[in-house]
Length: 101
Image 1 (cartoon, rainbow, N blue to C red):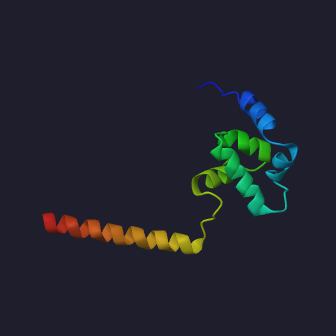
Image 2: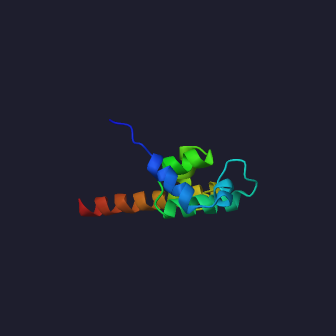
């Protein structure tokens, strides 16, 4: 599989965003919420996760989480709620399958 060249996309990012905006997405920026909001904005404008990851110095996984979940973090309570909902769903499916036999 050929390697994708993101040079044009990086150039577009440098043209579209100010130097200050690009500094806000950097790994060392002290205000995490501001950084995540700016990363989310870049993703919403169509920049790839790879480019945003390279420009920010953040991992691809970190950028992926922001692109999929926005700037709100998933915490342990959310995971417990998701697991409980999945358990209820599975139980409902089991009961439907039992009644149709």
